[in-house]
Image (cartoon, rainbow, N blue to C red; front, side):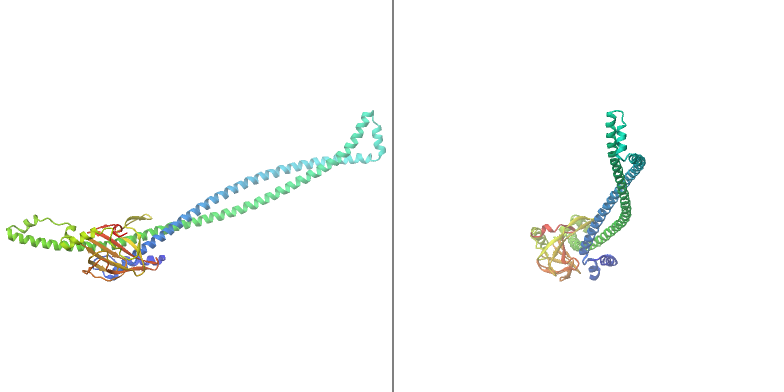
Length: 421
């Protein structure tokens, strides 16, 4: 059942006006028909909306955490970038120092080359060696020439290799910085996107909360309508009790008048000696009513179900649905399509209007609602197991149900414990 259909049903119900004994069957049917099914549907929608709210709230919380984590990551990236920039700066200084040293080494190297060029032939080398003052100096000059030649080659290679490594490291650091800058830009885009999503989901959460409040309001209104209809049933029982009391009072007054004539007392004096009876006493004041009450009482736990096959889908009593207090004076029994609804005991029909039947069993009453059809009328005597109508079905719920309740006088009680197991 979609929201428009539910709202339409609620508007229709409110237009119907106050319930009263003189209401037409059409008005009563508009108010009573399918009301329990619609309440069940509202409950289902409310549960779904509440679940959506919970899921949306979890999603918003997850997005918030994700955003915080991404911001932490961006902060870490910034720190890493600062470190990389410091490394680049430090390495750049080192490279510049090495280049200066390299330039000096090149100058020295040029001098070495010039010296080597001037002493390139064996004669000059020999003259350099033989010009030594002694053997030790000559030996040292030989070693110097060897070391000079080797050192020149090694130093040139080392300088070239170091320069290449430094240049490679700088290039790598520069690439890392480009990569980190790109990642930073990407993370900023993602952060903006997540912030936007979080704002969107927060809006959705607020909307869900509004819808939840709206459904709670609808459910409360619907429940108020159910209370009014249940009050109509209770009013029918109250009228029956009032009628029985009127008859009892008339009989009591007549008896008082006869006693006054016989004894010479006033009617008022005689009435004082005859106390008024309680509702239960009035309802079972005749032998037939007293026996029927006693028989009904003795069948507690053995009453037949109002339908041949069924199970209780809503219990009797107080309950709270998403903060909305509800009192159910009856139980809802799921049954088969077009199931026959039968009276649970012998009695007399005190009210029978569209969708509702109330039966008196001495001082006890049974009432049946959400009936698709009613096959009895007021004042009719019925026997245990006699069909009084058929259960109404609901296409949205996909099954039929009948509401069943019991009361002793005007005091309702849980009927489930009175039905046979």
